[in-house]
Length: 168
Image 1 (cartoon, one colour):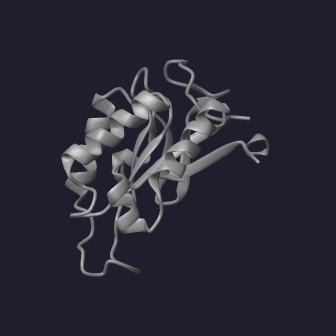
Image 2: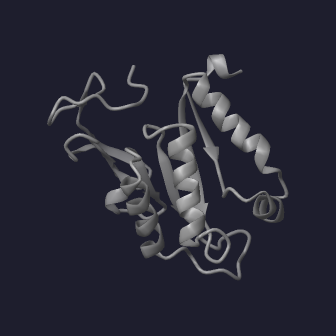
């Protein structure tokens, strides 16, 4: 099926098999295998990490995840740190503090990931796609809507650098 898809988003809750089994009821190995397969196939891949307070928000866990992404699939795979809201399950937990998401965002950028996002925090600078060469906002978002696109043929209109992604 991978051959007919342009892009794939995969949720990666963490890297501990025990944590994965306990929180999701699923095994971690097939998720990691799928991420590697999509990356090897050359398809556009995005990874989403729902950051849940007390479960997977420890700095060491986030650092391990960031380093795994950088090492296994490379710096051009977008990584989204998404804010947890206790709206469905885990009602006893608070929403993810924005500061935790910002720390993860900075950590990932510091480790060399070029496309890092903060999700479920409307208006946050981490919602936008920034040019990895000059830092200009190339895709501006407000909530789930794109409000401005500053790309020409997949390149930043400010500096001309090409951005990773599917642009046709």
